[in-house]
Image 1: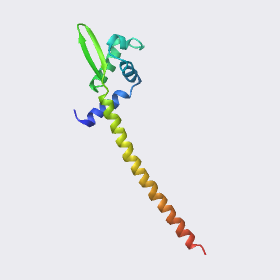
Image 2: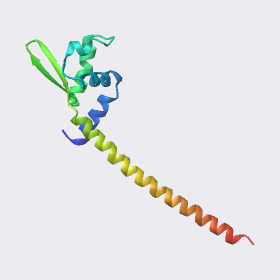
Image 3: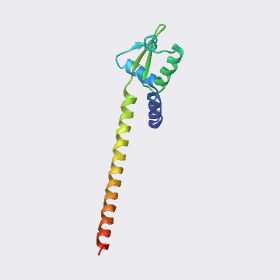
Length: 119
């Protein structure tokens, strides 16, 4: 899967508070699907749909033992998203610093023109 598509899926998965709560629960350790679903006021089918989004984003891995389905948290996609955010923040901070410098220089040049124009 390409990096932009992986990032898109990660951010989509994180956009929902239910999915973030599921990830938080799984960060404490592996759990059965039914255990993960228990605190939510929704059907098991609805929680399963949220889990599917997390699986597609590769944030959750499913393991089957007989009829039991166990879920575990996978942090790698979050690490990649955090890296992208940090790189993007650095890029835009640099651009904004350059813009601020140029605006200050322009403001200073305007003040100098104004002060030399005054008799």
